[in-house]
Every structure is written in C-alpha cells, then in structure tokens.
Length: 470
Ligand code: UTP
Image (tube, rainbow, N blue to C red; front, side, top):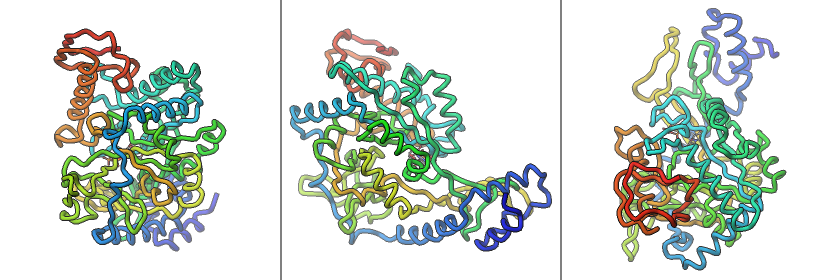
C-alpha cells in the first residue's frame, strides 16, 4: 500500500489535503478506510472532471435558440404507420428476440432522491391491486415476450437482462431478485453490474467529507453506463452471447414496453445504430428534454436551454416545432455501444447538479443542508447520440408508453398516484378494445397474460374491480 506521505503529496497536488483534517482523531480502521477511499479515486481525473463540469455548466447555461434545429422529418409516429408495416416491424423484433440477439439494459443506479425512499426505486409498489413492484412488472413483461417469441418461432433463446446498479442500489437489488427467485426468469440471464461513483464537491472544487473518514460520493449519472459496460466486462458478455440489439431504459417508467418488438423491428428495418423513442410534449411548458439537432448533431435539449418563445413555436399543423419529448428509452446496436465505450466515452459531456449534500464541516460537525451547498457531476445516457451514423426516432402515444415515477405523491405529477392511474387507464382501454362493455373499479392485467393488450379473448363483458387478470 502507498504510504501516507505519498497520499499527502497527491492530495496537495490537487488541493484536496483537507480530506485528512481529522486524521489525528481517527481509529486505525477508520484511517485505513479513508486511505483506501482516497487511493480509489483517480485524483487527476476527478480534478479534470470538476474543471470540465464547471466549464460545460457555463456553456449549458447559454440559450441554444440560434443553434437548435427541429427534426420533424426524422421522427416517425406509430399512429400514422400502416398496420401491415407495423406488424412487419413487430415480426422482425420477435425474430431478433427468438434468436437470442436482444438484451435489455435497465438503468437502476439512481438514488431516487425525489421519491425519497431508502431502497432502490425498482422495488417500489405504486399500489396496484397486485402490488407488483416496478422490477416485477418489467420482469414479467420480459417473460411474456419470451413466451410470445417461442409461440411464433418455435424457439426462444431468451432475452438477457442487464441491470445497471450503483453502490446506492446494488446489494439491495440483488437481494430482492434472489428473494423473489428472479420472478421466474432464468437467473443466468439476469446480470447486475455497478456504475462508477464520483466525489461530490463544494462550489470551490473541494471534495466533501460525508463523515470524518468517508468521502462523499454519488453515482456518475446514467451516462456512467458506458464506462461500466466497458470496465465491468459487459460488452464482452454481450459479444459472447451474440447480442445485437440492446434496449436501454430507465427504471421508473411504469408503462415501459421492455424490449418492445415493434420499436426493435423498426430500428432493425432502418439499419439504425441508435434509436430514440419519444412522446409528444403535453404542452410547450412541459419540463422534458426534446430530441433535436444542435449545429447538425443530434442532441437532447433540456427545457431550460431554450427560450420560452422557442419552446412555444408551432408548425402549420398546430404541433410544437420541438415536440419529440425524450423519455429515456433507447435502442443501440452492440457495435454502436462498442464504438461509444472505446472511442468516445472519455470525452462525454459532464453535467453539474447543484444539490443539498450532507457534509462534515471544519469543526467535525455533520450537517444536512436545507439549500444546495455543493455539486454532483453526472453524465447522461443521451449524450452519445451525436456519435450515431444512422439515428432513428420513433414516436408513440404517451398513454401506452410513458408514466415516470419521480416524485412523492405530494408533487401531484410523475408520482405513485399518477403511475397507478395511468396503468389502470391503459388496462381498461385494452379490456374495452377486447370486447368488455363495462369496466368498473381498479382492474389490472398481469404482464404474464398480456404484454400490450393481446391475448384477452375470454374476458367477461362486465368487469368489476378490484381485480387482477392473471
Ligand atoms: P433520474 O435522473 O430521474 O434520477 O434517473 P433518479 O435517481 O431516479 O431520481 P432523483 O433525481 O435522485 O430523484 C433516470 C434514470 O436513470 C437512472 C435512474 O435509476 C433512472 O432509471 N440513473 C440515474 C442511473 O442508473 N444512474 C445514475 O447515476 C442516475
């Protein structure tokens, strides 16, 4: 092990000597913990992260109105697609699944601070009649797709499910899956892997201490996925399994159509290396990023990066000009991921979030601030679109695709109540389309029975909830 003098030298070089200010008070074990934590950090990289992040946050604050271009001609809407064509896309997607070439990459390393739970968000139960968690709903959708692929093609080599976790979620996620027997999925096809952590800083670039002997760190954002894919050997695993199509999505969209065969088939039919699923913005003021081009490169632009006037621009058909709401739902080929991870990952944009970060002050007192006192640095999954050689965008109706669980119920939006309501409304719609005349109360359909409204032939005409069709 490096001796403490060498650690001092390193810390001095990068202006982080304060991390040892409680050294004299620490026990031997605590000293060892702190030394290991410091040695684990690549101080030169972390130092350049802080400088780059501050520089890019200054750039991000610039309004992009003069550089933004719409991409209406790129976005294809499912609603206007010919049904025959749609079933061709679906067939292509099922072929890919049955050949074992599809992986799902679930991003579940976030801390879920807005929802405010102490366990991984994927374990959250929004209060559906079945009380299934987000993880369970997703697992069962995968299981149903495997069965459908098997029925169509006489074989299904299985969908591989990669779950991105972080120090904040890894152990609890694994225990949860173990305890629930992987929800009936083949355990060998469920692979959790950890993303990296980045120290948290005060506004002057000093790394914060979470305890006298612990550095404050946070996951490196969902764009940390790319480094993790490389360093945790996941790209190699994908190659070994002959995976070609990877569906990447966030953990918190309760309606997520995991490995959607139509979307996958659409991307395959267009030979896309990168596919982006979008929904129309509800209105100009909705706080959601939009897919567009900046200086000719695909990018997701946040609501705060364009002026109100630009956000409100409308086309001649009345629709918003910048309308492709990004919902953290993407298709990548393995070749594209390889290229991103090995060629572009180290240049990825860094984003700064000002946060309330618990810290130990100079007197050794730990504080839980009530206003932002420091920054977390994050990479975003969508910041690789500019490297795509053939990006496609696929727009779906929001009510069947997107209802994110971000907040506590008190926020009134993107919260457990809205997630529950949207699932039940969608399932009611499926039942009515399948022939029911009256659906009352909370009626839920198990993903093991129906993935997207199919297979509901024998339902009664009058259905009274609460009820779960299994
Ligand atoms: P959000 O940015 O909404 O973050 O993540 P969050 O952690 O869920 O919630 P807050 O902001 O703390 O309230 C969008 C998706 O990206 C994943 C999340 O798990 C979620 O699926 N994510 C986020 C990661 O996998 N790693 C991260 O470092 C951050």
